[in-house]
Every structure is written in C-alpha cells, then in structure tokens.
Amino acid sequence: MTLQAGLVLTTSAVFVSTQPPLTSFLPYTIRTCYILALGSFSHALGGLLSGLAVLNIYESCDRIWAKNVMTATRFRLCCTLLFISWPTISLTLSILYLSLSLMIACYASGVLWLQIFVTIEILSWAWIPPLFVWCALERTLPERLRISRQQAGTRRPF
Image 1 (cartoon, rainbow, N blue to C red):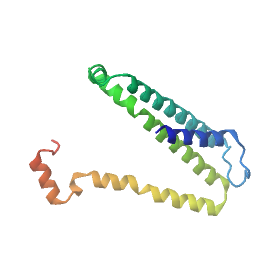
Image 2 (cartoon, one colour; image 1 turned 135 degrees about the vertical axis):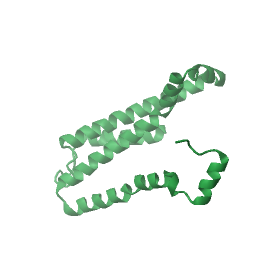
Image 3 (spheres, helix red, strand yellow; image 1 turned 90 degrees about the vertical axis):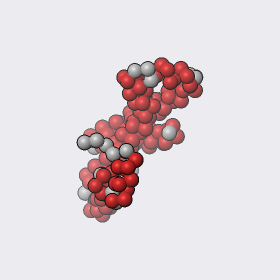
Image 4 (spheres, helix red, strand yellow; image 1 turned 30 degrees about the horizontal axis):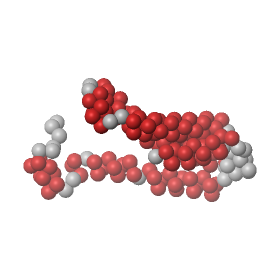
C-alpha cells in the first residue's frame, strides 16, 4: 500500500508544482483542478503516513495485547478497524480527486477529441457500481442459491 501511495503522492506533487507545457491543451492549473490536486496530494501524504503508522504499531505490539486492548469495547473495535483501513480509504480518495481534477481539465480545454475520449473513459467505468448493486441484491440470485442460503440460515431477517 505504501508503494502505491508514494506513486500517487509523486504524481499529484508534479501536477501541483509544474506548469502545463501546453496550457490550451490541458489547463490543469485552473482553480478547481488545482484545489483537487492539492486534496489528492494531501490524502496521498496522509495515506502514506497512516500506512507507515499502522505498520509500525502492529510490528511493535504483540497479538494478545492487540486483541485484548484494541477490541475491548465496541468503540475501540470500530476505531481500530477505521485506523487499519484508513490508508486504503485515503489512497482511494486521493486517486478520485486527481482523476476528477484531470477530467475537469480535459473538459475545460475545449479540445473536442479529448472531451470525447474522457466521456468514453467515464462511461467505461460508470457501469461498475450499478452492476455491483444488481449482483448484491438477493432477488437477482438464482433460485437454487436462494434456497441454499435459506437452508444454511444465512438469510438476513427483515
């Protein structure tokens, strides 16, 4: 995870600190793009630092202590899980911010073929969340899988 965060950190730092070679082609220094690139840089840096903290903390504590202390109450368990997952959450936000920044820059450029390319790229990713929701719904499962889930007792009560 730290390798990916380092790469995103470097990429967003380049966009924040350099002028575009052709401003008319990809104007990523407009205010909105620049703010999103700064957000990407901040989240990449935060993800890198929290990932290193998670590694160092869990290398230094023993297994029994982690189980007894960090999962003693529900609040500590939720905080521990959030702390462990924060590098991934932060890296995901960083990638989304940088992608959004570049998409806005592509649409602001006024170059038609670049706008068409970005639209095709957005549409190629837009079908994934609805497909996930469709697959996650129980009613879309085949009948034999629904029956086996009911017999196994894994059906959620409503």
